[in-house]
Amino acid sequence: MNRRDRPGAADAAAAAAGRVAGERRVFQNSLSELAGAGEWLRSFAVECGLTHEVTHDLDLALHEVLTNIISYAYRDNRHHEITVVLREHSNRISVVVEDDGVPFNPLTAPPTHPAATLEQSPPGGRGLRLMRSLVDELQYARRDGKNVLTMIVVLDDPFS
Image (cartoon, rainbow, N blue to C red):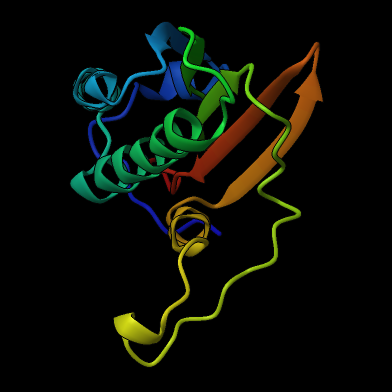
């Protein structure tokens, strides 16, 4: 679903060539890392010329994923690394998050349905619903003992 504009994107030659640019960062499993992850993502979004809407959606989705990993993925109190890769493709942005936490496939988690009021809402599941609403595609794999979640946002063709 192409629902996003991309003013200020890479020039037509780079887009036509299918250019892929990316950045990789490693964060610790600490909630104090969230602010730095957000700043990094927003800087990447500016470099890519993304709209405020796309930037906001990606920032919120990444924040939700990292918060869930940090809060629920580890059964010990040791330090763990969470790798995030941001990639700009000619017509989409992908965010790949890799962690060594307990296996969890968000694609198989049953969707929750909104309750009439917050008080009636059972705990859990709201973050997954939010994340699903913010990105166009989710992919999950378990590779080499790690969860690998890919979030994709499809961009409107800026040259059409």
